[in-house]
Length: 200
Image (cartoon, rainbow, N blue to C red; front, side, top):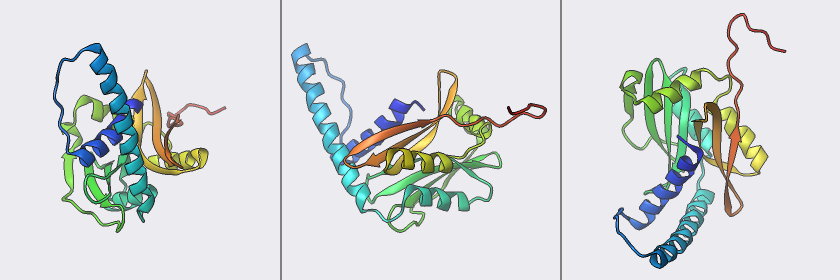
């Protein structure tokens, strides 16, 4: 998942939840398109404000939601997590371990699992998701480490994060709520050393 796509998904999921919108493809003139882009920018700003307002009222931080999800399956690691406001505020957390991927929805105020767990074999994943899971095994840090560092660096609280492969580089991308803005923090994890290699 690209950095822009991750942020867009957060904004889009909040937009769809806030408006119940659906996508229609229409052809319009350039002037109408420019007005539409400006209106969309205003709508995105309003959605981000609403998202941040709701995020400020929750009781469970993202790091705790990650810990709750990882505790459901011993030895699992978080692949990605996002904050959603499509109803009650929740975190959607995907963890991986023992050749399986689990998706759990954690209530952002109670810390309880609110929906039936979705579980799949790694063999069932599409190429992009499988690549991300394999990449997760090749780095020393975990998403929880990246979240902690990003929260300190951006002076805020994380509301989404995951491992992103872009231009053949692996990075953790964490979206931080800081004041009245969303900030994106990119961290390059250390790769797991291969046997026989020497660290300098």
